[in-house]
Length: 289
Image: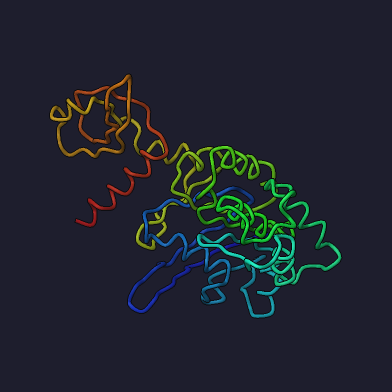
């Protein structure tokens, strides 16, 4: 699927949720990073056509999404929303069948598609179990399974690992690695480790604007030479301005990971994706003031 976003905007009343976003997607895994309210979910809902936008703002195979073309487009889209549910009285198999037919996919491939999707998320033995009897983690995996139906070329996952235990989070990351060939995959998550593990590119959204499309190294380099580690008891030695990225235990003591443009009397350490992301947001805040 060749997907181009051209000046995509979306407003709710006076609230400008998205502002003139443009990007050409390739067959890669994209991580969406941004604070709450930055527009990540709205962006996915626009691409999933839950929110309507100008047809010319979303180009599929280099042509606008007219009403006729949109039906074919949606057959090639798999979407897991942040808040997901299925009919509780149905078995998992019947619930996935309902989603399959709603997408207008070929009837003769239904069973094979459902069995493969269930296998990929480790739910084969739950296909005859009612949705109401599934645990929260199983329901999240069922949501991932329904997105995979029909082998779509555009996959979008909004907070897919919420509610999953560490083993299932690892399974999801392995799943993305296994299926990503030839697909465009968008992954929105607050878990930076998941982004580092599977994403080729990182899109940073801030107040409805796209700040950039970065490789992992490009985003990491934003904070290179500006990251320090210091014991929390020595925080008074730091020269403002500085920002505490996180607190953590180090050799039995509480330590701080700090971002600063100033040279600090602290141990300088290598930058990570999270450091680059926070530094980029701090730059935007400073420019706004």
